[in-house]
Every structure is written in C-alpha cells, then in structure tokens.
Image (cartoon, rainbow, N blue to C red; front, side, top):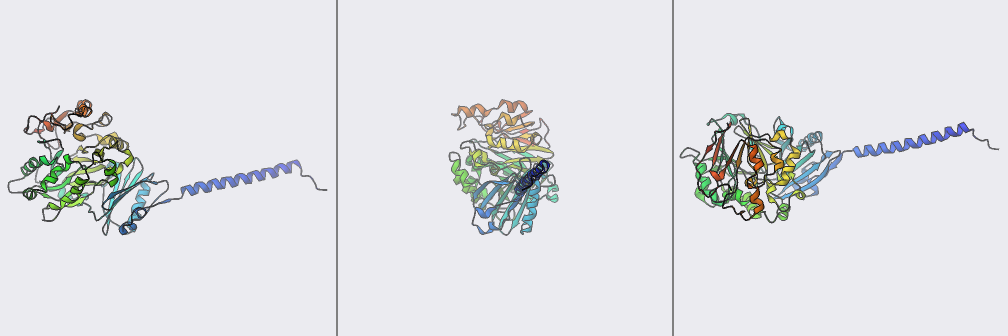
Length: 465
C-alpha cells in the first residue's frame, strides 16, 4: 500500500509549487519590462527617400521616442520629428552623427537659447544636417537638406561684433505707402542691415529710397541677412519687384536670404491662402542679387533653435513651420507658416513673427515659459489682426510696433477681421504704441521710452481705424 503524505508535507509541497509559479511569472514580467526598455533604433531618412546622400544619415537610438511626423519639404529637404526623446539621447545622437563623418558647423551657443532648445548643425559632402531638441516638450527634430548652405552668421565672430562704426543699433518700421504689408530694417552698428520682409511690389520704390538714404552718398547698403517670414505677397513682393529692375539690383548688396520653404503638403492643404508661384520666386530670385565681393547671395533655411549673430545683434529662431504638424493648422491658414524670431539688441528683446496665427501661439506657450516672452518691443502678428488675448496675457512688453491695416485695407469688407484690428488688451499693457499707418518709426537701442523718432506721414489716408 502507498503511504499517505502527512498533511504538513502536502502543504509544504503546495507552497513550493506556488512559489515556483510566482517566480516564473515575475521573471517573465521582468523580462518584458527589460524588453520594453531596449533602445529603439528610429528609422531615418532612408525609409522615406531614395536620394543616395540621405542613406548616410545615421539612425537615432531612443528608449521611448517615436517618429511623430516626417516632412518632405521639396527640393531635397526632409525633417523627422522624434517625439518622446530625451536630452541625453539628443547628445548621444550628436556623437553618432560625428562618428558617421559629419563635420560640426555650429551650435546655438553656451546658454543654448536660454535653456529651451539645443541645436547643432553639421555638413558632410553636399548634405546639411541640423539636429534640434525642444527640452520642455521632449522632441528632437532632425532636418536634412541636400545642397543647402549653412550661414556663417551661426558662428559668433567677436571681431565682427566689436567692429562698430555706429554708436547704436536702430530698428526702422517703414510706413506702407500703397497697401498692407510688413517692412522692418535693422541698422547694425557695423553700418550694415538686416531686413524683415519688405511689403508688396508697390512698396519697392519707397523701400529702395529709404534704405539707400541710410548710407553715405556714393555707397551701397549691405544687407547681411534678408528674412522672409512666409510666402505671402505682402511680405515678399518687394523682392519680386526689385529683381525686375536692374537699376535697383545695382543699388544694394545682399549677402544672404533666410526663408523656410513649405512642404508640398502645406501648399496642397492650405490652398486658399498659399502662393506656390511666390515660393518658387523666393527660392530662385536670390541668385539675381550680388554680394559685396561680386558673388551671389546664399539661400539659407532657418531651423528651430538656431542662433544667428549679426554684428552684436543675436536672433534666435523660436519656431518654424516644421514644428507644426499639418493637423495643427487652423483650416487653410497659411499664415502659421511664419517663423518666430527673438532679437537680442543691447540687452533688450524684440519679437518678430510675420503673420503667425492661432496654433503657433499655442505651440510657443507650451515650449517656452512666460519669462522668455518678457520683451521690450513686440511686433504684433499679421498686421495686428492675429492678436490673441491668451498670448498677450502670456507676455510682457513696453513698446508695440503695430503694423495695422488702414482705411484702404482689402479686408474692409471682413467685419470679423476689422474688429480684431485694434486689440485693446494688447494696447492696454503697452507703455507706447506706434502704428506705421501714422508714418514710419525709428527706435534707437538701448531704447528708452519716449525717444522714438517718428517719420513723416507719407499719406493721410493710411490711418489706423
């Protein structure tokens, strides 16, 4: 007969079996957890293009990051948005890029844009690679462009910064003489200029007369950088008119144009407001200008987090259209393709963002703290129309350079836009408000309240509503 197991022995056996089962489950869970922690090799550009040079871009290794969006901006410009990546992974990827033979061209400085963004640019053969990390939202943007230059103004030049022939930097807001538009000229201490937009074709004569008046007789203005915020005629039209007039082309030098070319998807989706023909002009017309040394200007594509140095003025790229996924655009609003630029001038700050619209304001308030938008000078978006209380409440500023529409605005029939033209919340927070409908304005930096130079009002009909 078989002996029966004592009760105590039976209980012991059951305990051993249960313990073993629990250990097996724990080991499996631990194994799954470790598998989840295994770094993910994020597929790079080779999965999206057959262009040979792009096959050499190494993959980014990230534990939790995923490819959120891939943008084909045309003309061999691609961008991959890696969401969920960390600063450490960004830095590790830079080492991978350098190991792959890419040569570092520049980064965004020791303060890394005040702790909000890390950006490094590289060159290898005909390929330009810019890697940016938005710290607060844990995103890495990897932008690759074929046969596109990187500006020397991305590198701080102490000699240039101190080569001052003028005592102060000045910002000129030009009055629009023919129609709505946007035209700002920064007069640098080295005697050269940075231009933002310029206005429509009808503004070309006034623009040329004005900028040539800022240099001694017999000399030509040197525009070190001409920034075009986005592809709308009332911002780039001056360029299209100048290139058709050889006399004007001979009156100025332009060393470089800065513009972010939209993707074909953007043009397709935002059809009611986009201008593909103007985009083509912008990406080709620059070749008709001349630089100081008799060569042709370069065409540059600003990237998020880059810092440009012009004389002693620093310009940070806060946002470009590439940070906005196509799903974020409000209807057909092409205005949100405008880039955001924060200027640092003699210890003061000035924001320019073209016709930036609603969605980009949400993006910047997510990426930057309120302290970043503690400004001295604010240029409202879209001629003063795209001004939103949630953003103006997020900011502080002393001076507003208000590019508002006037009585002849093409938008007069749009009651919804006219109502927003004069934003009372914006004006109530400012200590000084200047309209180019009242005439041009010149601010001398460091700017002291009450010292703005108001230029003659060219035409009485162009008054704020």
